[in-house]
Image: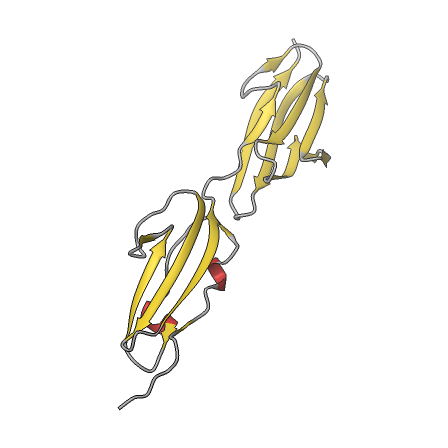
Length: 170
């Protein structure tokens, strides 16, 4: 016979705790996650509802909970919160569009839509443009063809880039 006076022990869920993820995949075997002297009934919940571990979930904040109850009625639970963000940053280029021919001196601004996203690089014809307060500013007033490139990332690891070809002059 087995004498069991302890609650089941739920293992490490730290890879989901307090993090921003760009994709979510439950890849933990519940039987290996929970340790106890007897057989346990283990349930996985996502946002308060039973979760099968395979269904897709929407972007946003989520609460993941594991509950384990052994044969003698001892139980324990562990809960973690994470944010799913699968969308890449939106790079905004103001005052010029793809294929446009500018006819007068133009101040171009490159930013990102959300404050928590980071503008990484801005180049004009492969020359780096300084970025201050998540914005790159360029004045175009010399005749010629131009290629503007910008890259950005977010806390979840999503990345994006944009390339705009335009010209200046009559």
